[in-house]
Image (cartoon, rainbow, N blue to C red; front, side, top):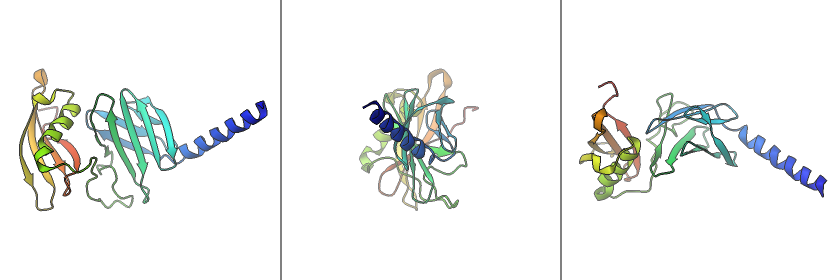
Length: 194
């Protein structure tokens, strides 16, 4: 019986090691000041600390640490897709360090921005935006003000607004939704130096 247990343990360890070897080298920034780094083959770090890794298969991993879960999916073209979920609420798509949105093609050609939600109706976009912004800036949704929905020629919807951060001042932002109404991201329009 001990020999069988040892064999099963070794096989499990080997399968985890093989799966971890497929983690690509990644550097990304997520809304709310979340920094993600993965070395080729792992581990994954969240804000500089090694995260607890859960391997689902060679194309999907989750790393947990500091109240955040990072989801790393490897697309068929080899490009990484990185998103985050805060334990207290809030989620979104992370930006790769090369300036391309998570999910951009591996050959360097930019794809459409990666959406991170189910379709949101136009009437619900401002409320959804306020929720994402409140998570990004760690404040209450009541401190977030949104403007009108603007539809660009390319079909992307945007909503501008401001968030009151108290002693840190008023910050401007823009939420984006794709043609189908799926949330893309929140872009800070005021730098921390202003």
